[in-house]
Image 1 (cartoon, rainbow, N blue to C red):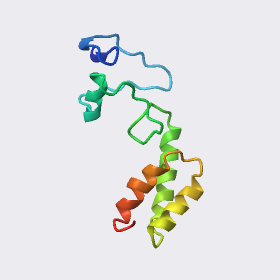
Image 2: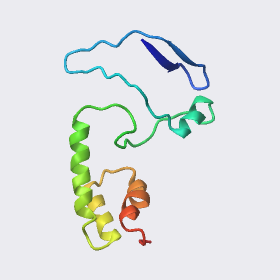
Image 3: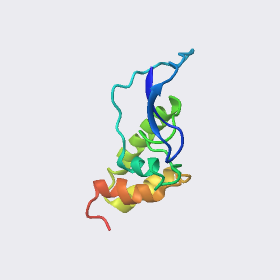
Image 4: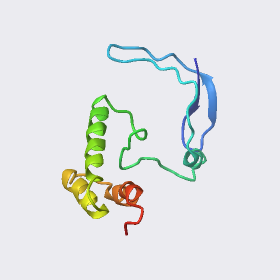
Length: 122
């Protein structure tokens, strides 16, 4: 099969023949017809962004994980939906930070998620 490969940051992006991955027990082989290339990855390819190792994993981003990530994400989203039913942004934020004290990317929650539901929040 053919695949685009980037061997190293700043290296050549090549479209070449590679072995078809083996389908093992408990796995599936998915044919990708098209995939997005995020704009910041251009900086990674040209070595203007020397490393790409995000501290957190957001659904749809980060390293591959098992099916347990789907269950964890569903639980998190249900908890978030409950939190935003509260009367204000601060209460919703406190609800989530109490429920997830180990959440190490708190600024994502407070900068993006909560303000999306409470646009006038400070």
